[in-house]
Length: 101
Image 1: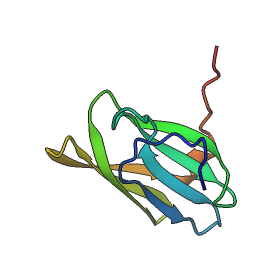
Image 2: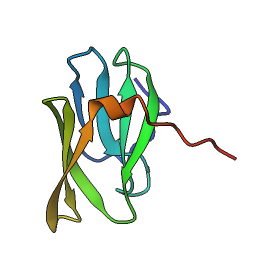
Image 3: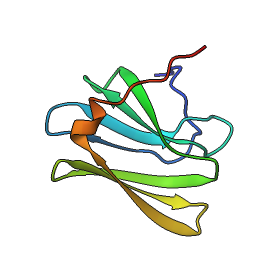
Image 4: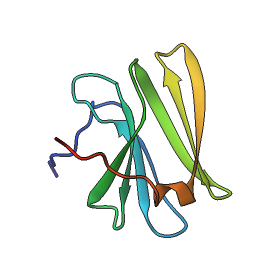
């Protein structure tokens, strides 16, 4: 089904969390693989929260898993490096979506 969800048409990774929510790690720019974002959904259909993870450079091939109260997010930096981010699940509740002005 076609949606208005932003995506660079590159690989993405998703998982269902133990608490029932869904997370999706992807490139949110249809024109390039930058930035890398984390999107959250309560039902796996409507993703109503999106957070910036990293950017300002070519980022691709993300993968996300839940482990010991954290999200572990691995990705390639321009096919030259492999990097891993660790995000506390409890911190997801504290994140705020920046207001658009």
